[in-house]
Length: 419
Image: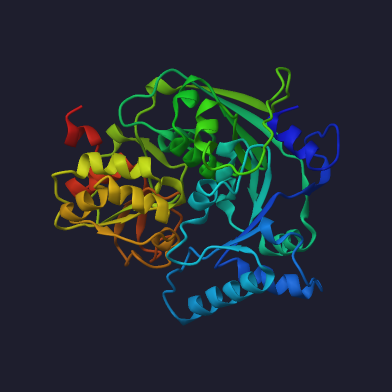
C-alpha cells in the first residue's frame, strides 16, 4: 500500500484498502472558514444535529474576508463566531489568527498520519506533514462536523520524483508550477500526488507546504510527503499529542511514476489564466505590472518573507507599482517584526497587512481594476480571481515577486542580486 492507502485503511477500520474502493473514513480534524462555515452550519442544523462529534476536533478560522470588509462579510463572521462559541469549538479570532493553512500546522493541530477534511480546496496543504488532507464541500463538512466521518473513494496515487540539486532562487513553488505546467490542471485528477527525491529531501518545510497546497491545482485529491527529520524538527515544539508515521511500501502500486531533473528547473511564472500556463523566468519578455502580492497560504510563511526581504533590503518598490505583503499568521508577523523584515518592507515602499486571504480570492486588500496586471505568490490565476475579469494574474515565487516589485515588470531575482 501507499502512504495514503495506509492512513485511509487505519481510519476506516480496514487492514487494506485499494484505489477505487468506497469507504467511510474517521476524521481527526474538520475545518471551515468565514466563507464556507455559514453554509456548513445551516446544513448542520438541517440534518437535525445538535452537537458536533468532538468540539476539540472542529476548527473555525475567519481568514478570507477578515477583518470584515463589509456588512455581509461581518454577518458571515458573526454567524461562525456564535456557532463556534456555542459549540465550544477551536476558534481563532482576528488578532490571534492567521490564514487557516498556515495557522493549523503552526499550532500543532495537524500531525502525521491523520485525516483532515476542510471546507476549503487548499486543505491539501497538510500533506506536507505526512497527513491525508483534502478539501470538501460545505454539505460534506456539515456531516463531518456531526458524525466525525466522511465517505470517499480511495484515490489512485502518482509518484513524482525530483532528482538533483535545486538552482539559485528555485523553491517548492517552482517545482509545483513546473509539474502542473507539465501534467496540466487535470493531470492528477482525483489522485494523490506523492512527492519524493533528493530535491524534496533538501526542501525546507515552507517549500513542502507550498507544493502540497498546490496539488489541488493539478486536480489532485491530496499531495503528500513522507515524514523525515525536517518534519519531526518542525513538529518538535508544536505536537502536543502522539502521532503515527506511515511509509509507502517498496512494492506499492502507482498509476504513474514521473521523474524530473530538478537541477534544470528555473524559477517559473504561470501566465493567465491557468496555473499550468507556465514559462521559465528567462522566457518571459517585458511584462509591465501594476501590483505585486507576497503572501497567502501558499507563500506567506517566514521563509518566504525572508526571501523577499533579501532582495527588497535597501531597495525601492517601483514608483508605478503597488506591493502588498501579507504575513500568513500572527506568529509569522511577529517573527518578521523581530527579524527586522517588516521595517525592510516598509522602507522599500511596500504595504504590510494583517494576516488575511484578502486579495488571493479577490476579496479585499488588493482587488484589481480592469486592465491591471498583478504578479502574486498565491496559488490561482483564473479569470477574475483577483478582481476584474479584465485583469491578469501571474503566479511566481517570493524572490521573483520581490524582484518584479523593484523593476516594475516581471523580473528575475538575478537581475537584482547579480547571481
